[in-house]
Amino acid sequence: MAKVAAPEPGSLEERAVAAHRAYLMALVAWERTLHRMNCAICSPSDLCENERVQVCVAAEAEKESRRIAFRDLCDELGFVPAGHVIALPAEELSACCDLASSH
Ligand SMILES: [Zn+2]
Image (cartoon, rainbow, N blue to C red; front, side, top):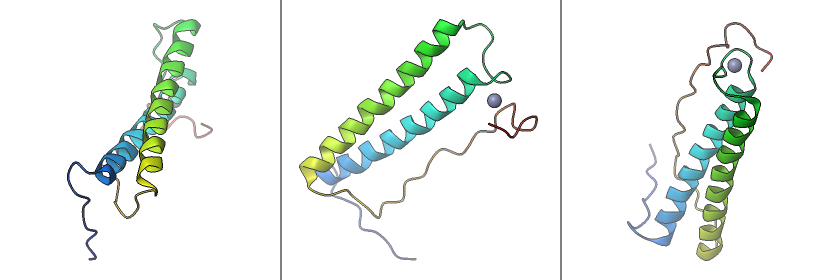
């Protein structure tokens, strides 16, 4: 199995890789939040419409700020770091998955 050389600890490249990971995590969290807040089955029932919108907006803002942080690091680096396998968090099965496949 080919081994990809790890970037220097503390280097710009390492920070860019870490920022990429943080961005992907926020992206996954945002998608999950959108689902939860819009799904009749898994959404928390104690939130009003306004609160749901706010939760989605906050998750999207988090994703956007991480995307910008990653992009800025790539700009500074001059390239997009590649070859580092980024493990995404395992897909959590939603409570509604067995009941509906439409979303
Ligand atoms: Zn659902």
